Length: 190
Image (cartoon, rainbow, N blue to C red; front, side, top):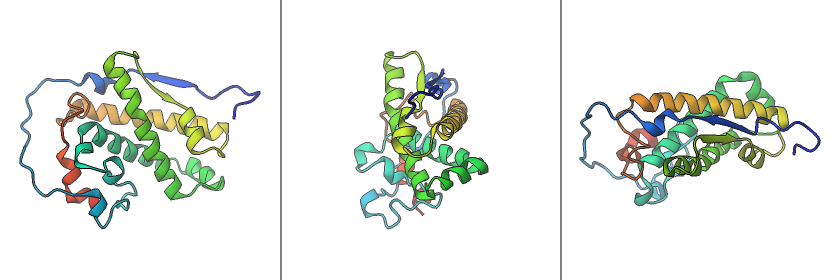
């Protein structure tokens, strides 16, 4: 897509504060398992009140892990940051991209970040990279300027998400493989 043009910001390297979550403080967490929500059987699967459902990040109980919850939260944050940019949203809509396609983009972009997070945790990369390639692949007809703007918005959403993680007792990154009881909370399915 960038033939003969200066490529968009090919990478924004962010040192992910949340990947080195502060371990200070011992938070009490309930291990009581309440009602289990089964994504495939829930009547609102895929129709979350904010447009993005946790069911899009787990298809079985084994996938109800904290890392997937983090990705769900990042998708919501990305959607929120895009919605705040009225002009950007209008321009994206002007390119034939509807609200449901923006939601799909947020979900897929967030899921793509899983590999980046795991690479960072394994020490294969020094920083988490937010790239333009996934934006172009998921929204191929929006043009380079909108790709650049979406990448900037994604970086802001990422920064916001990771800043919140530093104070959050859930520890979605440091305890990435632990079960996330939030997936079973009816609030997120209504």
